[in-house]
Length: 145
Ligand SMILES: O=c1[nH]c(=O)n([C@H]2C[C@H](O)[C@@H](COP(=O)(O)O)O2)cc1CO
Image (cartoon, rainbow, N blue to C red; front, side):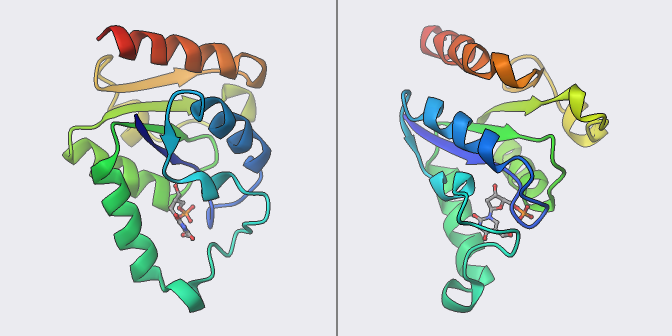
């Protein structure tokens, strides 16, 4: 299974340790195409745009999105890139699982919360200590579907 993980980069890296935890769990279900999103070496400046170029980053990621079987996004830290990826993924009819932490004190964008349909686009409120169980539930149901 190919998994596309979305997490904030230029939107802010406050949750990078959580992204790492999520990606490690996801790797027990398949290949995470966007493992770099969870790297603590990646700052909020993003990948080396001078070497890669923003267009190359965008085109590579959209190609990975197309290849992916499922999209998992940590959406607590607001990120334009994550919002864009989710919009494109909806258009590609991908199965999408968004994770949001209410304990952050934030209110999730209506364009994410309101996209929930309980089937293809699922939004789950969670706390850090339950993230592994929540991912287990999601992938167990996915295997049965
Ligand atoms: O350097 C990058 N590499 C990269 O893969 N992305 C993708 C993956 C992330 O899920 C998402 C983060 O977007 P943003 O940087 O706007 O927070 O965009 C984003 C950047 C920088 O915008």
